[in-house]
Image (cartoon, rainbow, N blue to C red):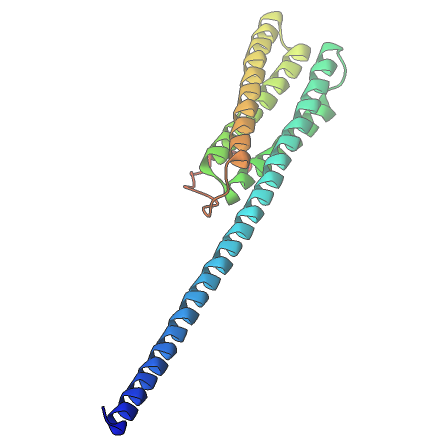
Length: 199
């Protein structure tokens, strides 16, 4: 092989190496950029899921606390009825606290999931019935006869049982959601909220 051909071959090889290096560099940069984008997206998803979990914990907790406050007032109301004491202020407080509970229950719709919101709607409805039955017992204890009072107390017992069952269902649904692995879907399917007098 003469010197001219050897020089040409060397030149071609050098050019080919440069081309390969150029495209190889671009490919490596693309792979690196894709990996970085995925890392950023995964981090954003993780932070979002953490935020949703924290917000849900707060909303669920507010609902349970609102129920607890109402339950305390209703207990005081039953004691007042038993002791033939005035019940007007306690009934008024119970009505207001039931309205606050309804708001807390409705707020579970904001971040879901549907299972918790449905349990919250049932809890709010059970509490509404419970407050009304307490009011009827208070009225019949003063103005009703023995039969009316007995019937009212029976309905009240059933309403209190329903309230307890609804609280258990809500607590269970909330716990299942807060303990499950986080996902990128914060709300799931949204149910249509039940209509009550506060809406």
